Image 1 (cartoon, one colour):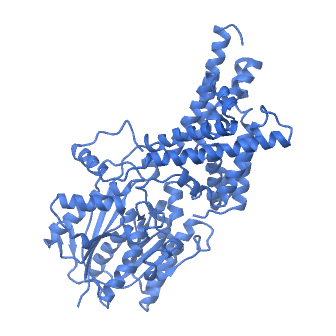
Image 2 (cartoon, rainbow over the protein chains, first blue to last red):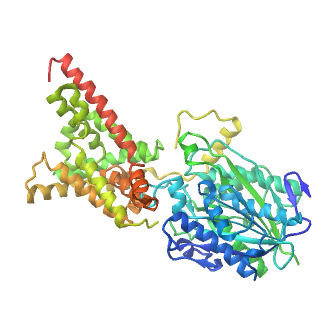
Image 3 (cartoon, each protein chain N blue to C red):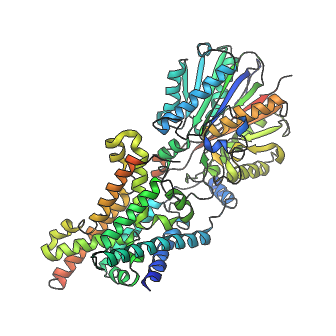
Amino acid sequence: MRRGRTWTFPNKPVIISSAAVGGPFEAQGPLSADFDILHEDFWLGQDSFEQAEKKLLEQACERTIDKAGMKKEDIQFFLAGDLMNQIVTSSFSARTLGSPYIGLFGACSTSMEGLALGALIVDAGQAEFVIAGTASHNAAANRQYRYPSEYGAQNPPSAQWTVTGAGTGLIAKEGKGPSVTSATIGRIVDMGISDPFNMGVAMAPAAVDTIEAHFRDLDVDTDHYDLVLTGDLGRVGHRICADLLHKHGLNIPQDRFGDCGLMIYREDQPVQAGASGPACSATVFYGHILKEMEKGNLNRVLMVATGALLSPITFQQKESIPCIAHAVSIERMR
Amino acid sequence: MIFLWAFVVGGLICVIGQLMFDVMKLTPAHTTSTLVVVGAILDGFGLYEPLIDFAGAGATVPITSFGNALVHGAMAEAEKNGLIGVVTGIFEVTSAGISAAIVFAFIASLLFRSKG
Amino acid sequence: MSDKKKKKLTPVQQQYHVFAKAREPHRPVLLNCLKAFFVGGTICLIGQGVSWFYMTYFDFTEKTVGDPTVATMIFLAVLLTGLGVYDHLGQWGGAGSAVPVTGFANTMASAAIDYRSEGYVLGVGGNMFKLAGPVIVFGVVSAFVIALIKTIWLTWFQGGM
């Protein structure tokens, strides 16, 4: 059932299992207890950062399947994406997993892009078990988009830190767990921002566009959700998003409006404006948020993952940054 | 005294670089490239050598001195061999710097791993 | 980065830029300049010390001490890069660590170290100059032009050098 650009899922697909994997930096953060696996070695014992990123995603998938008491042969579809050129992390992980695979590219919005599509497939009766997820690695992302790790560049206060980690979820037709109730698909919003060290500012309008569409399509109150979480707008972008929503008349209560990028690291960790990367929203959601829902602390959550769809070349060609945000609502069914 | 001036002049050249970072919002590559060109231009006008006499390492250590050294090398060869010396002389003076950087960087790649 | 030839922004986009700018954290320019001054000055001071060392204990004169000094500074920078220290120095000192020749060495060493995963030929060899390339290219091109102009000027207009 579609309303505007929001899909609703009458068959209430369930997230029956999930896993969050993180690196050494994430292990020092306040959500470390909600990670299934935390690595001390930045390289995960691999020969390259790209291989480490692949290992993160593979481990998250493995863990998710284990926790559900299933085997990887039971998974009917695997939906994943990442930041690497040609989304190799996802493709190579899919090779290991062996399931039919759909590759996605949404940059940091991939987590919800995957969850939305996974829920759609299961709700439509076209699968019983779908895994959706994503991963990122700080050094792999830096190599591709910015500078080598040991380079002495000075990051401005608006810069963000790419999370090293992976988050995956297993969506099923039925079972124990919170349900995916709706998903609003984002469209590209480009406000002419071209500074890749200021992504929060670039992405905020996309988040606003999708959040407004969601509330409009479903016609619900601003306090309908216990928590509305943006993916990785960071300190700067989140504030702009809140102010813009307020300006447009959508007043989500401040204590119910957060950002994953501001939750995953402590104040004293040197991350400037906050965390970013596909794994940011994925690890916070598939780790911390789902655990909170399990405990009964949260009943209805709207996850709004935001992505900046630039490439190192578009930046050199002086293009601005087109952004997108996908929103998915998850509810505890009683 | 030269130690004091090395500190001050070197520091000031870096402040110019920092202003290029923060006010003009240039990338490090743009900033250092510009400063190299500035060093070359200053030597063209014969202004960089006096700065080196005055501030020592404060003028030879910043990347501007690379531009100065390149022009110097080119001019020294041109004096000997005419116009063709401009091309042959360019790397004479800076070969120590570039060779050192290449060799040490290569050795570093053999010994070290990125630490993130 | 700011782009003087920015594509035309629509009124909505321009409005947003103003809105966003008011909410962006300001770069602490004065503090950054002080840190850059301190770090850059110190690096040059160390360079002066190295020069003095070579002139006192070895047979170098003011004219010839430049080469070993630069080579030593480059060695130190590569070492600090390999040990994982230079990137922290760069975050704190900004241009103070990027502008001295040590910054140049850092670009090459960090690239060489990082690209080892692609092998020594294509990875290290092919990418070593990724960040340092612009400096070399523009240094050489500008030096060529300036030396050319100066040589022609001196030869033709002032009758010989």
